[in-house]
Image 1 (cartoon, rainbow, N blue to C red):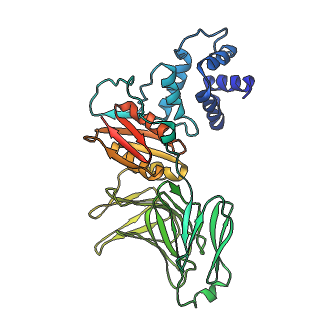
Image 2: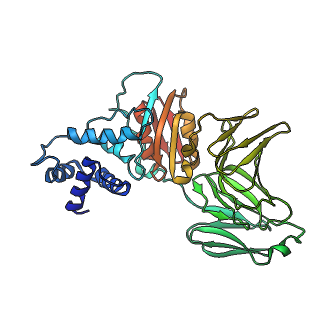
Image 3: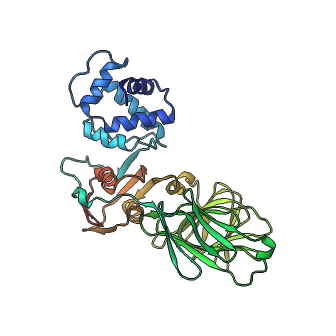
Length: 397
């Protein structure tokens, strides 16, 4: 990036006049620039005339600007305890790239953290890349089609329905009128599955409903809907945009619950191993049924929790529930086990604890496009040590 553009971004940031995209561009440059490069450009700006002294300290007025911006993202006014050394700032600014996010921690023990000997034990060859857009489609005859960026065009013909993968999306298109479809006696079912480290491209069902799958998830669905209802089954986590059809309700089933909708947007998190199942509603309405005697109708902005019955979650964080779809990890005072379960699914790793599980609480956001070592580097500042070996992440104290 040319000096003039960098200076304009730097001065705009100091004045608080940058747009979101301009701020991202500035942070991207800032996170990659060396200390000397930062001082050189800073000295050319109107923020502080003249050459900036050769020191590893962050300029005080600029530090205050950064702290004010990060404080603005915090719900309770608390900001991370950043070290004044350049490396500490580089790690902190890394979280601001793309999302303007932040990460800080609350420790059960308010003991000062010494980071000098808390480096990640791994080699670059052992680092783990983030997940990718990929899925496997199992057709009605049991054959399997791997779907990734290299596979496009017509994937299959299922009964009177064609399956296409174009422009990064999977689409089911009926090739006969809907009236003929209702006469089809035997439904053909397909299943879309993601493994660890994968997230599906958007899937458009034959009725126009759109579905996105998070890592380690699946959806089983008919290639064409017939009869009086539209029924699909999922495992893991999925986001739905349901095509409206009041005469044909849409049903999503998991192992524990059934969700009935007419036309809506909602997210279901039903991973095995998680403490509960959560359904989050954006618009429309859904009715959740768990067992013979438990049911609940959700309104937009509400979230239901299924664990020994159904209950409404008080003041749910809708953005957090949908963070995975926007490419973000969003932790709200999450314990270490919760954080690592999400990392295990996205990075396709096994997590082991060497000794007792450290008691920590994390609050913040991290983009899902970072390598595992970068994420761990941000987490380890809470006095937890990690070791990456192949596909195994070991946690020690």
